[in-house]
Amino acid sequence: MVFSFCSAINFFSKVSKYGASPAAATEAASILYGAGGAFGGNAAYEIASLGTDFVGAVNQDLANLTDNDLRKLPFIIFLNCQ
Image (cartoon, rainbow, N blue to C red; front, side, top):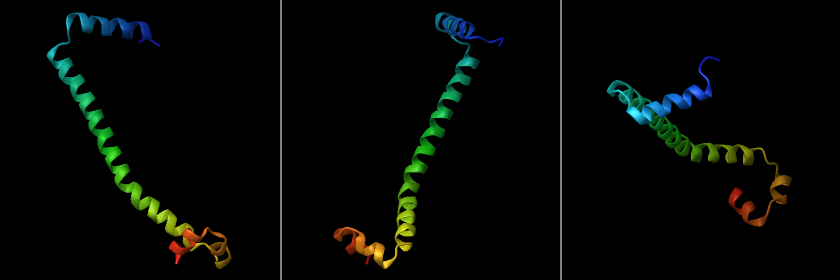
């Protein structure tokens, strides 16, 4: 591997010592903010869809229960199934 860990450390130490060029700084900011935005958007989408996925899965599970299975459930859950 041509680009080793040591050369990466050397590169970042040079950037921290001398500063990045404006083009490199803009590119780095673009990559970081783009990744952050993608992460935030994905997290928001997953949180929003969690409720509907959970309700759908519970409804499917309860639809497959027979009367004998319903009678075995705790009383509070049994009341909510009817």
